[in-house]
Amino acid sequence: MTAISLNLEPLVQGLTHEQFYDLCMVNQDLAMERSPTGELIIMSPVGGESGRKEADYIIDLGIWNRQTGLGVVFSSSTVFKLPNGGDRSPDLAWVKLERWNGLTKEQQTKFPPICPDFVIELRSERDRLKPLQEKIQEYLDSGLQLGWLVNPQGKTVEIYQPGKEVEVVKLPATVSGENVLPGFILNIQ
Image 1 (cartoon, rainbow, N blue to C red):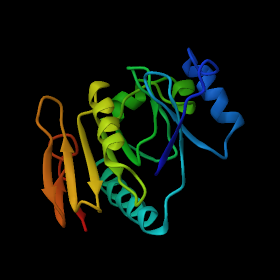
Image 2 (image 1 turned 45 degrees about the vertical axis):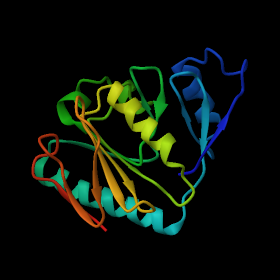
Image 3 (image 1 turned 180 degrees about the vertical axis):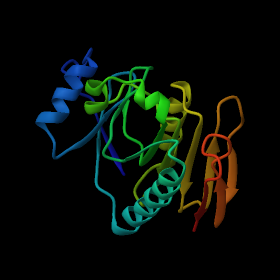
Image 4 (image 1 turned 135 degrees about the vertical axis):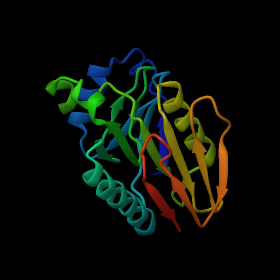
């Protein structure tokens, strides 16, 4: 999704997670995120090709997850309350089942206060690359175990893991879920 950042200081300065949740609930027609510094980010919808690819990735991960029963899969509509202060929604996310089950029902119902173990960010036609790279770094700083930034325009996939340099793979490619998603391999066209 292309992001539009709004500087609404002092209106959103110091906005709590709960207030951000309430803001999203009264503006449900807008997809919003919040950076750790409090910047409000409004996400625009994507085109057909990006939406199709995102759906394919969700289907593939969902099939693997149903077979293994190791976690929970989330779409881009899910906002995660990250430990570093941001409220973010990756294009696709996965959380280990034991971590998900460690949340209360209320936490699972609202914006879950947990960093996904795995995310995919898919660069759409209008997305700038640098903000997406910074977003995945934000996930890493919050506890992410594996992240893939799929960049069709640059014909690459960037693979992010804690304590490792970013690995850049040329498209088309297959990428492995490593030990985070054992046995999961995604064919990225």
